[in-house]
Image 1: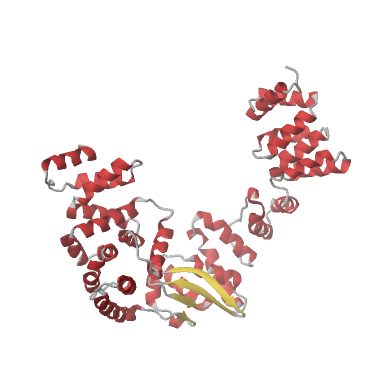
Image 2: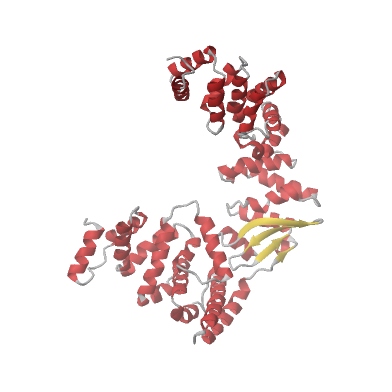
Length: 470
């Protein structure tokens, strides 16, 4: 198969595009992720000349990223609050995934703006994802917005109806700022779409589970609404849900649990509906316990990076959790929640970790620890030894103090101290230069013989300074 650059050259010589070739379109689509500008530009040119065949390839790639990718087809957006909200939601959902779906959606939007007949055909597609792409694409072309909104009048998909209504409001406001002649027509479409969207708008508050709107559950299940955040005032707590059209729905703890249960029956686990209730609700202990049971039961469904922290919060809130909580001492204070949970679970190693966490809370990476060596007292030596023994992150600085104090216990920590990266290495070098002893020299040579690079560098420094004999 010829390269994309060769194909472009052939097109230029022929003066007319050849019949679309789907294999070429796929090759061009995957080349969009190319690391250099030339292959990307060549790929875009091929796709923008590919018509319906290219659109079919691009839309297939775009839908891999889910509905959030629809917004990528909009390209540069008008500065309407709701549109920026949609874009930020799309970016958050796609931030950990591949870039290609978003790039494909963006190019599909440009292609639809280039080919009017194709865009009108996509507007009537049986697939709501395609209809969404066509609607998003017209954010690039104000002159096409009235027609695109009119095409949404009979839209059957609830999330797309709500979205069309918000887009109509945005288009109208930007047209008012431009002062062009489309304002009145846009207002008519905005009014009609707002009325059409009313039957899919859930109430903005749910107090009793019977008030929970099935529409809201559907949106949570399809990630068109996002549960996130909670607030509490006195004995009243609420869990917040952000809807696709920008509305924020407040759920009582009972409604949040009802929504969670409804989603679980669909195989969807939204921990942000139950975790706050399980850990922070104060006014209804029965409901708090029920939320904790659900959250603990479903920990396995959380992403691995969230699971341990969520388990720790549940344990510390008084819930029984099947997962044994672990911690990372290098995170210091930030592991406090996990260490406490491990203590509550009876982990015998947690006491030692807690001791280090408390004792070393202000010692990590602080070069000032090395200054203990200048005090020249027995108390300073004991302090430096305790820090070196109990605080791994401060071992280089504490060892530097012991070396300067000519305390033989420095030999115990020297191998680990040499391997510790950071500014404390400079304090250790200065101490070895100022307080070198033949015994330390023998230890450094033995470590060098074992292949320790840092020991080799230290020996070279000491010999160069004339402190260690050649």
